[in-house]
Image 1 (cartoon, rainbow, N blue to C red):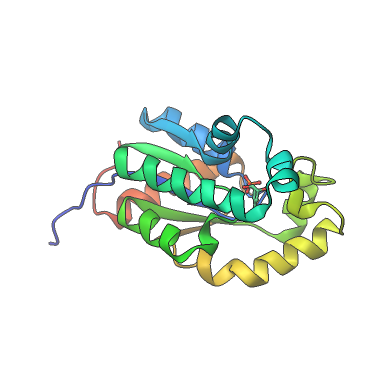
Image 2 (image 1 turned 135 degrees about the horizontal axis):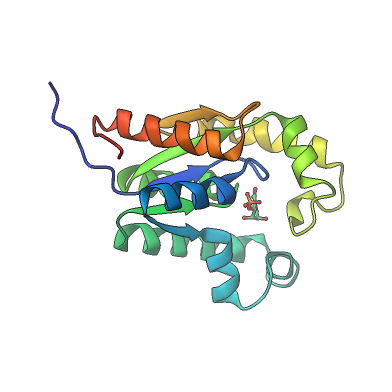
Length: 181
Ligand code: S3P
């Protein structure tokens, strides 16, 4: 039997509204692991909100902060549950850092469910100035292949956040050949 590898960190990826932050909090509680919300870290570091960063400094500046903080958090930390922003996967090096420093988990969701949760997209600059459903469908097309690089994929359709969290934990520890808890 192959030796069990240790699960270092759990990193959740997926489109806006897929439940990454909520599910990360539940997993953190269940495993007794620290939870890290990357969007929150970015706003703390910048001292302004995400819409303000996009409007005042531009998306490229946001992506630089996102990349820097993701690498810092993952290279230093162990037993972290990280909720990334939906676009963190666009960058190839980000994807490598996530896979090398933990288990990358894709929370797959239906566009109609994302729309229902996000409403008019308050606080999400990428959804401003357009039809959220169309924008999300376009982002899904652009990013699906990146999300699918995750070691674990969980289909969240019809599941509560608690059920998603349970599936993530089971799949992540199965992937590592390790017992969860
Ligand atoms: C983004 C998703 C957002 C946030 C920013 C950009 C994206 O995070 O990082 O608005 O590019 O999909 P959530 O996925 O937590 O909404």
